[in-house]
Length: 324
Ligand SMILES: NC(=O)c1ccc[n+]([C@@H]2O[C@H](COP(=O)([O-])OP(=O)(O)OC[C@H]3O[C@@H](n4cnc5c(N)ncnc54)[C@H](OP(=O)(O)O)[C@@H]3O)[C@@H](O)[C@H]2O)c1
Image (cartoon, rainbow, N blue to C red; front, side, top):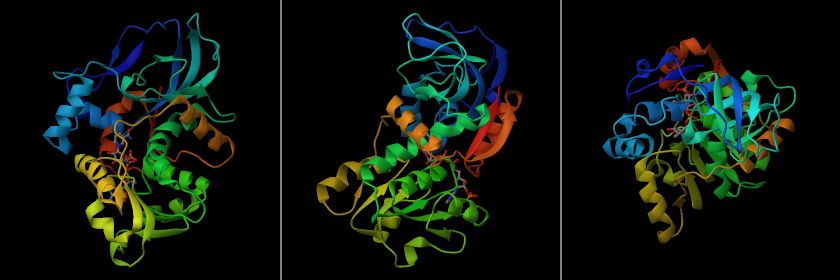
């Protein structure tokens, strides 16, 4: 089969299309013919071994993906496709079913075929969706859900979402809306209308206004893009407010320290625990019309390097889809 492979950590150009062996499903696995996948920040961070985030993160990243070089040659976490074959013990899926999901650190979706355990993050596709629409459902939504769950969002709770135009941000706005929270979203001028249409009650253009200086405070601040900090946004939190980061090693220390001190705290779940139940929950939101993944650009798999370069600008709006 055709797959995008890489054999060393480095820039987008280390990826190339190659003929590789088609995987064979184990007893509890399904073989999926992938029709669409994405390039997301986990692909990017893993492929470059987190070199932009400092030596500690690089070592952590390599300890997960392979110290000398990548153990898994094929990237890609999100997928939408068709079940091609099932293992003997599989009961939930049958040949011909349309499925979507997320393989996380097992990757493998930048290929014509991939295997997933039946019990992993895979589900039947919501009715009426194309493969291109279904592939980007999970990345931003699972990451946002992991971060937002401890914040107990509901009617009457206020949240500020910083970086509301990315994959995690656009999902975060829609999830917070579905929980009934009052949402202030911060993004660039060009995305104000989009973010409003996703359910933000208020939008702040970060090129015009610094939310830390307007005197407003919130129960929750969610840095959906990893560009802010607890230190800078602390004064904008209510007395028992919660700060939710998406990355940054220093946030680990804050998350250990702040609950012991009391008052404002950082909550950061590492490693993230994301389950099949979470995928089914998000699928339910899609079917109820409460969540839709935002798609910025779509590239054919042959253009994966170009797609990756675009993701690395850190300026995509929502998600970048790859058709296979
Ligand atoms: N996706 C994953 O699997 C994964 C894995 C590990 C960690 N993470 C972390 O999760 C976070 C979100 O990832 P993502 O995939 O959602 O990001 P993303 O989609 O790449 O974020 C891009 C968006 O962020 C906005 N942005 C860029 N710089 C900004 C700034 N200074 N202030 C406000 N907005 C800014 C951009 O809009 P404008 O520039 O146009 O404003 C763009 O819309 C990151 O911290 C990432 O490191 C993600």
